[in-house]
Length: 444
Ligand SMILES: Cc1cc2nc3c(=O)[nH]c(=O)nc-3n(C[C@H](O)[C@H](O)[C@H](O)COP(=O)(O)OP(=O)(O)OC[C@H]3O[C@@H](n4cnc5c(N)ncnc54)[C@H](O)[C@@H]3O)c2cc1C
Image (cartoon, rainbow, N blue to C red; front, side, top):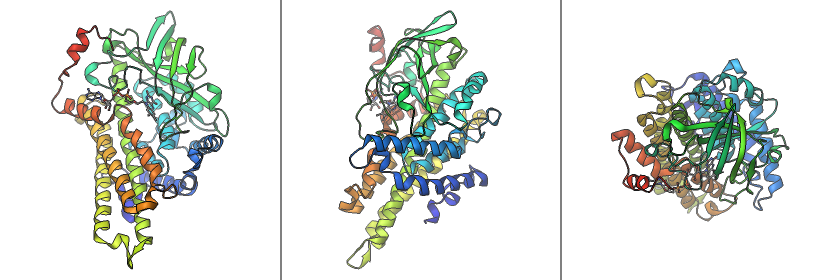
């Protein structure tokens, strides 16, 4: 136990309540008892056994649904817990101590709830709430990235002009066509049934009603998992997140959805929800996850340095080792306080601006980009300090090192984030290259 890494001390009460801390403590106990011992099984062990991985991911996710973490931001009127954005970020941090992939699965439910809340879609919340509030456990996916690039969809200066998945209105329906890459979890609906998982809620899909239309035509469309016309590739093979996030291609072949499954209802509202909730809050949750992961790595290396002695002295009592541990703690602590401060700013839009404003996007981006660099530094230093054991499978660091990377890259990545910070600080301005892109007829 390290007092400064326990919820009572690590979460600043300038930004959260004593009740929030009790919730974080309860989740932490659950994580230590139920998730920590199963970390390797989530990937199917050393041999990446698919059956073991799937069973472990589905059954542990069902336990998380049981304890109520997925319904934390759903208002009480729909059967949720109606908790604050601070609790949402704390859940992300605590779960990521064990596995950032499971935390992301839980976070996907918070994410889709936030879209429907901000869109004022109480009808859709009522429709989907029974599958969110527990009893059964359901997963969900948000589809943004396209073959011509994910980061350009996430570029506020391009105003969604590169979107090529098109939703055309026909009477009371939208007909969706196009191709998404990388969304996860994605796949045939039946794939997500079994071992404790009841099924897949569907795909909250970023699309446009007119590729030339930019901001006013961008929208967020709910496509149920069993909609006719959905086609999937095999899951991609990748460095981490093997079974908690089965990523692949989705082809939309004349997929028909009722008109009311478009989340946004006014011109420009879709673009704002995508910027604020999909990208902005997605990056903020990512910051909390990266700091949870970094904290777990610091705990591992602290323990190791206490148990390993060289020439009669515990490693963590040697000054160079101690200095590195202090650097890791310093970075983690600063990032946590910053992401908590930004989370608090989310609740004060009259002071800090709307969630989709360039200033708030800059802050969401600053929180995740610093957290990503902290996770990179902490996993790298931990491996160095632990020597050969750090490199081993048993040492656990290698898993965290593989896992942090994508939480730093998705939703635009470190370069995109720097550009978004600049846009908030002294924008708006246009990129060199954007004129050339427009001169080329906007072809991507
Ligand atoms: C495990 C995993 C899970 C994922 N889950 C999802 C998901 O659930 N849903 C989904 O839609 N997508 C998902 N993705 C995709 C991910 O969000 C994208 O890969 C990411 O947004 C970057 O897009 P890209 O790979 O197309 O990179 P590109 O757009 O090709 O960008 C390449 C590089 O260029 C940089 N860059 C971009 N613009 C500029 C610029 N103007 N100037 C300088 N540099 C720039 C980027 O930061 C990046 O480093 C996932 C990816 C992985 C690996």
